[in-house]
Image 1 (tube, rainbow, N blue to C red):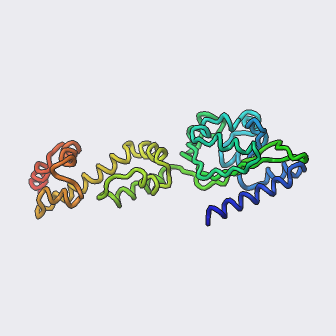
Image 2 (cartoon, rainbow, N blue to C red; image 1 turned 30 degrees about the vertical axis):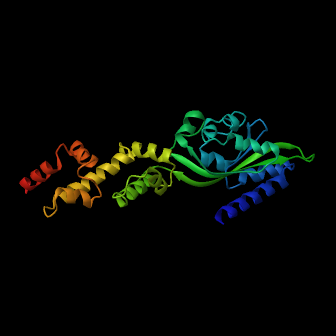
Image 3 (tube, one colour; image 1 turned 120 degrees about the vertical axis):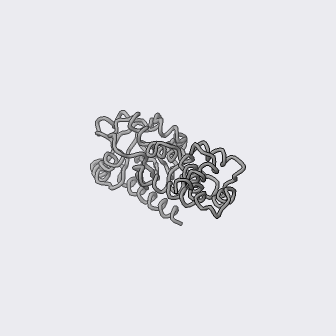
Length: 261
């Protein structure tokens, strides 16, 4: 239902622009004042017009540095996300809806004339539609961007950590953890390591080991019971991992803790 509403809104936008195409002065004025990022492309994929919203949201440094130089069909970010051929369908007269297009902003900085800001990724829905002249021929095509989220990193990583800390008794699931952070697995993995210095799996393991250490302080529990309370097998992988992480076997850790008391 929500997806249909978004598509309906995008279709309405497309119809409005098509009705203005041919009235050049009015068309340019409307695009410039349009609140959503929009670009107009020639049929070879070269940018011919970009509005202020696109400059602000996408971070394009200047119209002069973008128009006539940027080509969507040669964009390595678009290619990496495997939507180049989908965009090209607009050349056949189709309206193309691309949902959840999440671009790595640092890749955009590397490849294009955009401002290097404290942004990790931009997620948006994109509608590409042909602009037809009076003879019914496709002369240009437009792309309207509905920005869904701008990821700056810290907030998303905090959500990922919270998910791990809530589900630490369960087997580690990168896909679900990234989903909780509202990021793709690739973006989440990259951002987590950047902001914490360790991988999300390492964070999960460290959290579990700390929970075992807490349980080992309870002398009413056997060592096996302390591990079991954390959904970990004392006789298996986690016992070895405990020693790797702490430098002590579980029994030695418990002994040292009791001596410290």
